Image (cartoon, one colour):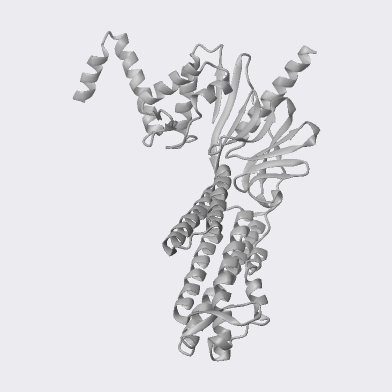
Length: 334
Length: 115
């Protein structure tokens, strides 16, 4: 690509990011403008929950609701701007961040606009009819699809084969590295915090029940499950490739050396594997801690194994060398 | 990080392991606070005696490059970096040169204090 074409492409990507930022900002602006216009005219309380028959069964003060929606949409906008402006974020991570922050902004905006708008139209909280506006509330959860689609899709990258490491006679090698996923750590901490808050609130209210215990137990299990994938150790040695959870001390993925056919380095995308953690699909198994650089190992039978690891060239080259040496020595024995 | 040991090398296996950790810290491949593999696991991976790895880790701990604690394993010291590694290398050269001249370690320490 020529220099001029690259500049043009960069300008185009920048314009798309600006547009995506404006879309994420729209709910914040809408909440800000309508809060100023509507709060003076609204009755003290706003309809906030409807039962199955469409009757209002929950209300909330207008002022605090507008502030909450403003704060939530501002936080989503701030997070979205950081993701859009972060220079080293991969295209797929940026798109994912745009979706989630956009959807958070959309939900925050709809959480104010629909209840407050319906209450203003009806004149009182009790007379506000939800009707078809429930669809708007549901659709707001997917508002992030707009900035997602505005951003350019990541360019598909082919895996690159690696040259096996040159190991001398009498030389052996091993690779070991601890890899962590900050996003999974954050999710585990968030669930743990929710479990603690739920336990404290339930204990204070004195309404502890079997359901509360089960709910907290489920959250505790979720914390352990997510945390198990948050920090792993990747090892390559004479046994093959191993990925072990540091918290649970269990192997998440094992590829014996004698089954390794060849190794590559690749850009691994969570979207291709259905998410983070230990993933399986026909013909493949992965331990993904993030989208980004990783190893791709093809084993006998064609099954492929993908592992997130920083600077995957070294472990991939070592695994390739050890596998070649193992095949060479097994041929000598036959 | 990648570890390579060569049994035919004039350097002992422990020295080879320690040198590679020092080089990784000096190059920034191993960052401050980063965990090293447990000694037993590294020994199994390299197919060496666990005491070989412990000797390497002990040497690095004495140089201040890593810290070790029972039950917590080994990790790169907070103040370890290219500077510390370079100073350690200079100290080794200084002591080696001093020994050639018949000076004791205590003599060298007195000279360093006066400097």
